[in-house]
Length: 141
Picture 1 (cartoon, rainbow, N blue to C red):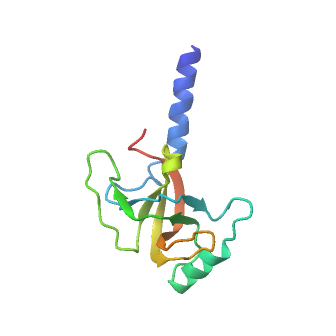
Picture 2: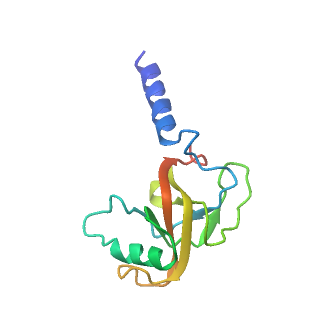
């Protein structure tokens, strides 16, 4: 009985993380962000969101919600799919290798290559997204 409840609980958590209305479409480009992702609505203590907000404003993206750092490598979005090119604008999935079971799907995004944040000592591809949700990573699940 306990094993059944655990399995049902896990299934409900997976559904809550990625309801069909919010899940990334299979044709969405996916980027691996080797330096991590940041939830700009709930940043870690001491993380200054202003540089990301300023970069987003300059690039014409309103209300940024997520930030991906070091997103220079494409990945398959769903099992069996091809790696899709990312045009540095539009819908995108951001994956942080340290949090493999989840991913961040953003309905719109912009990317810039450079040193957007003072905390990142090298130039890197930075992706800033809006309309973002955290969901289960279908490659891992």
